[in-house]
Length: 450
Image (cartoon, rainbow, N blue to C red; front, side, top):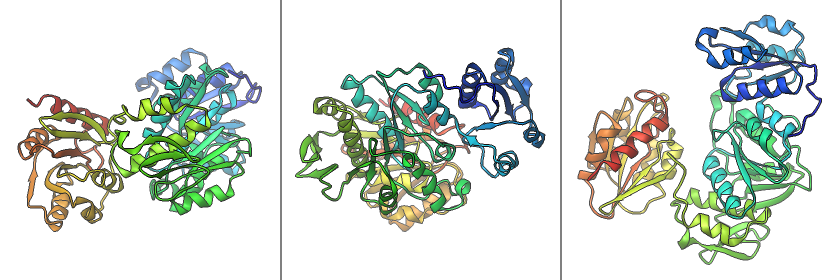
């Protein structure tokens, strides 16, 4: 890794732990910074903080005291989930103290070029696809970021023979200053995280940071079918590479004559791609554009796209049971994601939904329910989804207590050729700690079917 002297003998506050905070604190300590870690969780309940304390790093736990702003910190590294409305962050910015996120550190130390991927939907699937294709092409990629592996930890191990494929959230991108990926990608932009950003324009502005430091030697791959993304592309100094599922973009990736094309070259036939749905076609086009820029051959692209069945909990194909295909889309914690999943299938569908809503109704789902013949609900939101299902003209609507119970009920009401889809349109917290737990229970129940 690179060892910049940027933080040598500088006082740095790491605010908020979790995996990224621990990695940032250890990295800064190794770079010669005077590191203080501040986390809200009490020290007695905080093994990560205890471990850092044993390494000689100053630790303050239990609260975020405003008095820390009087300690002369020259940089704050913020956990992405801490909002900028936090009094400590607001005070730091008023004092002119730079506030960054851990991905900025990752960029500063990385010997490997970075592919940065962001957007509202499809980030994880596209990040995983790009990594898999580059791996198949022998490009030695590493995967990092919001996908679950801490970016700075990966960057510490990366060499100039690697490429880091990094999923980035809007929260992370608000805290970058010099971050400059070799290839930046925005999959799409829809309204999301408005409680954090305030409005859609501020959210898009945060996403646009991914390309702001890029130059002509870099590449910006963007969704040419979305007006907001096109606006960002017009402001970018990078070499622009569009992708589109609805129009021919001759300098990028597109669809023609039932083939995925890249700059006029046939790459893979649509019929050979195993991932279902229009939104996954967009993910595929973005992947092809990025991987062709990186020099991946069509054989590697073909190898991955003909076998890749999805990321866990994101329209993940689980199993074919006597002609019924089961899909786990537990990650669909909002209406938009559930709509996209439902619209991915033309065959008769048995739809499993419910959980914890955010005070919203579900009328937007109605157009996406046209192929649904049975709705099975669970959780706190069950009555709201049942009302919408009735308005959509669905005759068979049932309620069960849990996802586990929904699986055999769905099978009993299915016939060969049906799709059985878990895409809850709700958060999981009424019954489960995470959407992953909910999805795992669904998958386990499917595998237990005779």
